[in-house]
Length: 530
Image (cartoon, rainbow, N blue to C red; front, side, top):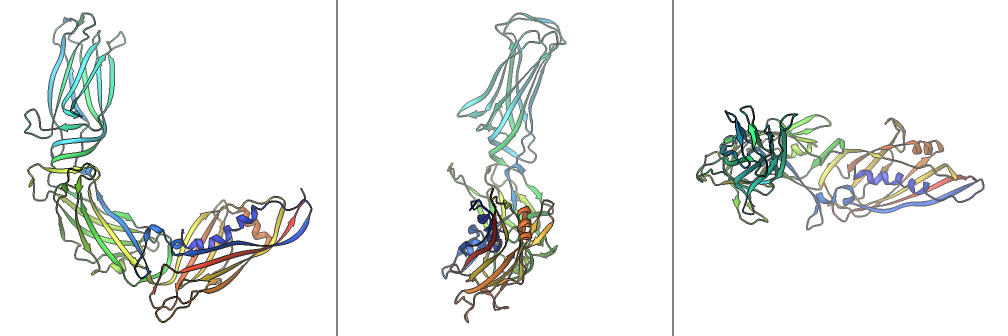
């Protein structure tokens, strides 16, 4: 619990300071030691993550939270098949092939299976081309593989390899993997007026520096070329009218993941659904359901809004031709404040459940093949949540398990003692806590304090603003047995229960609210001579 645990747990971690003190003698005697252990100030930034907090002009504080509901990426639109070409050379009769004699000279215009997409250009972000050759000739062969439409810095892709000769054990095999990151592929075919066409040229001949070799009708030269691990950086064309159904999906919602029980009433919430289209094609979105799920209680609340069941048309993104920022996405924002959104959030969800459909190019090829996609830009639906910290908390309970390791000191023993917590509370919240010690088996061995020990909330004026700090003094007895259990503990369960003052009034939190904490220890110790 980054947060509330820090208010209470910090006191017990302070005992670490005590156990790290140096030996203070070589004889055996009992002494009483009183020492300040903690003196600190806690603000709202100690209770919540800084990145979630913003301060309003009146110094009141709000939480700003964003979660991605659905992210539809480039990979869903363009799936490059593995095999590029497969060529097998056979001669139907027996010959003696001279050095340099041509064996294969073949141009292949392969129609790539890209589903409904009609692609004219692709730029590769990362990936490889694998060339595998199997040679049964008793002489080396010189193989050249070319992709005239695939270029890097204007230079076409080409592989030239001298494939080993077969031997008495059988045909030789040869493999080559070539990085094609950054290559641009022209898929318009040999006449520049088509799509999905990858032109490849294979040329193979007997090693010009070799010997004349007898070739029978049983001999062959096999060439297989394939893609491996290709990630598309850019593509242009028409990607087809396609419908993608998410099915029942779950998205983590971790804003309340430390809350185990209790009630939280929020005075005001702003909730927006933001649809961001980074594809250079029109799209439509149909949201079937958005539901908040309290994963602790299994309580669910479904969003009741006009966006549910309605088709949302989203315009295409614009291409800027600026390499640093090539896409200007199209964005639609829907304010959900006229729905039951408060109940959705006050359900303290641990996850959101949703179901939606996305359709690309619902009106067909309206761009005449000038749709585009970039790798880092997709179709995304976000929920943006803004919660002013004005709320009612009733027994709002936060729980966390933290690692704990207290080393046993050498040279002295702590017989018993008292930890005294002095809290000057400037928050309009009362807090009671409990800490449990866990051993290696995650079994509870002790509870350090009880919920009867309460940090009292600060007093408020008629406007429910804090007028002064309220002091609370809590004493925690530490017996010798409890000290031993602290030494053997491996984890702590920290539980903190909050209540706002002046219930049922909403209480606003300001950035200048603080709690001053002081912890002192009064211990009886026996110092042993070594």
